[in-house]
Length: 198
Image 1: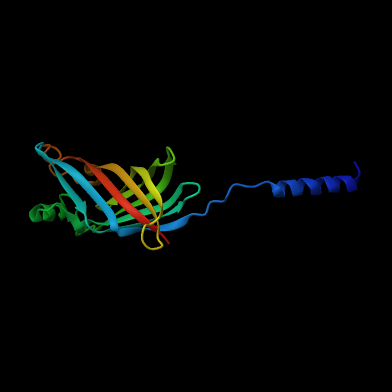
Image 2 (image 1 turned 120 degrees about the vertical axis):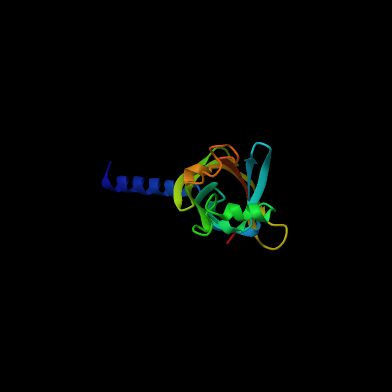
């Protein structure tokens, strides 16, 4: 093959490759969790008689999400430990104390994502680090994507998510009433949120 024909062949190949459609590149967008649609609840068995239900009233967070590829990045949630609420003032004050949340010394509980593992189009695991009572340990959260789309009012584009995990509080140093079984060690956590695309 002559040099001229080789050049022509390379030019044709380049033209053909350029015409082949390529998958859309990931374009993650930042989503800010809407504080008006953000609930973090928990439950704890009390002396075996009943489960105490509670929640944290103040929290914030954000993440990067690519809607086309369903990929999640840089998720972070920050919870005000002082905002714990179980509808019982004395109990809430005890929960804020060093026996449990130690909220005066460590007012913020932080979860930072390290990896997302998809299981299906709408479910997956989010691995990360939970900093609680001044100690950071790994934690895995089960996540369900409920809905993505334009909100019925205004121009907001919203992602809705449900998440579940269990925190074994003794690993973070909260051992009060664990040995005698009066207060559960493993605390199920439920998170419901809507996040607005920025």
